[in-house]
Image (cartoon, rainbow, N blue to C red):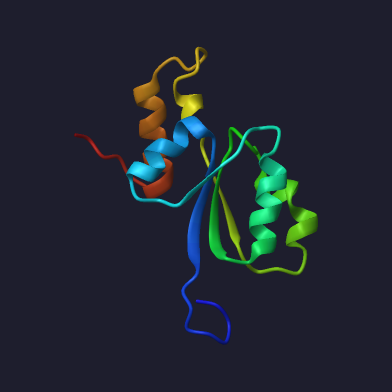
Length: 115
């Protein structure tokens, strides 16, 4: 919630066009960017002051907090959450995509899920 108001803060994901489709199918609000315009897009999102949480694909911006330190100065929101790029899971140098995804789940929620 915002300070002094009953308005809920929104969540958005900053992602590449390819991955954005999956997030949209899951019901998330997504803003698409390319590596060339991702920092400018993230700065725009921050300055709009519409979101409480911005999940940022690390394939676009490896360290969103460092990339936007100037714009975030003096702001509490939005919280910038780096999320691992799905492209990394299926890169040629990734030996085992299943192990990679398992590690992401384990790191995120603290335990393994086996299906």
